[in-house]
Image 1 (cartoon, helix red, strand yellow):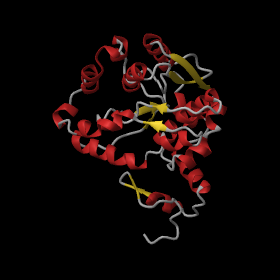
Image 2 (cartoon, helix red, strand yellow):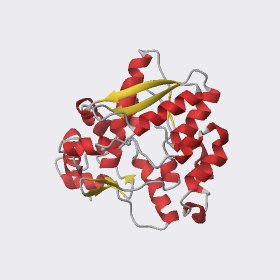
Image 3 (spheres, helix red, strand yellow):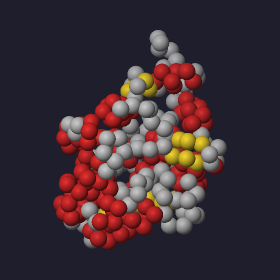
Length: 275
């Protein structure tokens, strides 16, 4: 169970503890900057649920060593998805090593951020990243959900380690998408819904935690986002490296590969295709 200690993963961890006795929580952290708030929260949740905790730690070098694999298996170069994919690569490597050939099934808490438009921009060294379009709640949700067509940051990356993934929130997609625009406008929408769905399975301290995401991990140094930028790996670098790995000669072809959150082709090498 991939566990960040946030609402989404902690809710699924509660269900996993009920239905899969002996399930193990897996927590990502970057080394070198002290233990992150995410790791501390994950430890508390795992202890509360009686789950063992596998630490998936990486320094900057070990993290960035996964870049090419993430760009290939995730089939995306955009910074948010690449950064999320790097986290999943570290998690996947730790799980595969712990399984030692015995096989494992990975559960994640992905998808509610799209269903409930629970995203916000990040600031690092005076710049803004992960900005969302300025749309009304219902339209923004539709845009984010449509964009899941190009989200291989979990399935593709974990598959590179021979690990099948289950995203339990996908089972309830119709129920999530039926939530009205008025509910999406509530600032406490996720906390309110999680209280209703998970009840006592969610410890009170999880509900009270401020919003966190694995790309920053609560790390003061900037987490995965900051690590990439500090090593010169920005949006331009990612786009160029993606093109190199997929043997795309014309960078304009990369821009045509994904449009409005959807793939235009099954393969990124579009240079020879008509516009």
